[in-house]
Amino acid sequence: MAIPDEPAWFVAEDGTLDIMKLIKGFIRFWQRNGEVLLRGMPYHEAAPHLVFMAYLQRIINSGGSIEREFAIGTGRADLVIDFKGRQDVIELKLLRGTYTRPEGVEQVARYATRLNRDCGYLVIFDPTQKRPWEERGQLTTESCENVTIIVLEA
Image 1: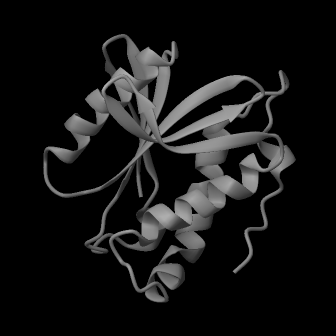
Image 2: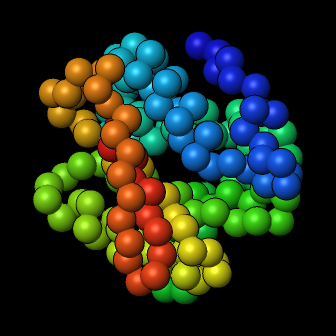
């Protein structure tokens, strides 16, 4: 299945990547295609992460790079995007319980701080598939250690 979004749509006026546009583009893609894509993948635990990374790679190929399992201090960020010299951190999680979100928020805040960023991104996939696909993609904002964390519940 192709990812139709054009990378140029996600570039801000200053030449950096508009991460919020990227996340909103992924939400549309995920709501339309996620169920079908997951059905065909043998590794259901890793499948949402692989779909997100494929979408991200399509966009980033236009002028940036993605580091996976990027060493930051004593931890490893799932994804660090370097686009036109600016680094952004995205952490991917599967919803495992009430601790997933708060632990993920703290983790992203630590990584963003180490990268001298005041914003980071947390994507939490719900593997139970109880929520209808059209309702997936809730965006909320949290603050932790003076860092704004954008949380996507997919």
